[in-house]
Image (cartoon, rainbow, N blue to C red; front, top):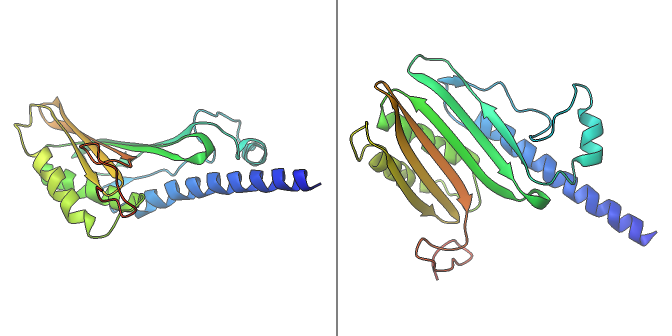
Length: 203
């Protein structure tokens, strides 16, 4: 009886983690201040699972605690002709541990606008250790990278803020469009390999 209760408790805890992740993705969609796009919302069930409509609750109780690796692929609808495409992927690993968040933003060449919107996307994600005061430093780094070379050339760079490792890639799409790809993962080391303390600073 004790074993069964412990197993049920563990299942409930894992399900709660899954539901928390799903809510985090949904709150990010509504929390990212970018009125130039519209999000259709996230699916009830993440990829790679594919289910017929109406079976979500059954899946949730049976597989929600133990889905393995999973992700939500989100595709926005641009509301202005200056933006051609925006998508994001939230990835989670075993036992519902956050893996990474990727965002791709395609629009007319406007480094200032992209730096602002990607900073707000990171702020809305509110990953481990993120602070309000981190916004300015991230924005400045993004602007420097996005505006560092001729827009017909590519740019790559990395920055660590606390426990968050940012990876930026800027590429030309055509004569009138550039693509900015921002990746966010969690790390316990600085860029030089030094371990981080509990506040996310190098030891």
